[in-house]
Image 1 (cartoon, rainbow, N blue to C red):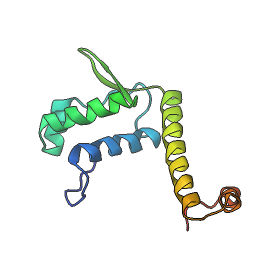
Image 2 (cartoon, rainbow, N blue to C red):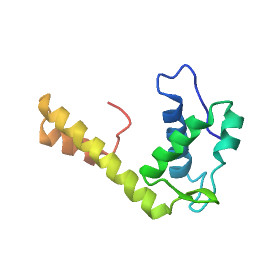
Image 3 (cartoon, rainbow, N blue to C red):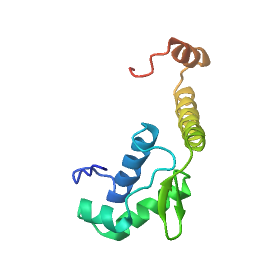
Length: 122
């Protein structure tokens, strides 16, 4: 189940999108698994069905899920998801690396950081 935090600055639909992404990449939702219907999830979360529909459309546009008319929404294949997420993260990495270089970090510092393997701490 997706958790909503009404104190979070992100829109509700974005929290739903992020929640499903985390469940899919974390293996909680497996490829081929059916997501709750728009109506059911809206009732569970006590929010407008249009918000769920917007989140599902975003997930589908990003390739996380596929809609089968008359059947529902299903998680896409594992390989597709991992490849898409890898591309998204590499783009974020490229942007961060470019910003660091602009701020004066050297290529050597970036390479050393990657080779060190501890990417959780500054």
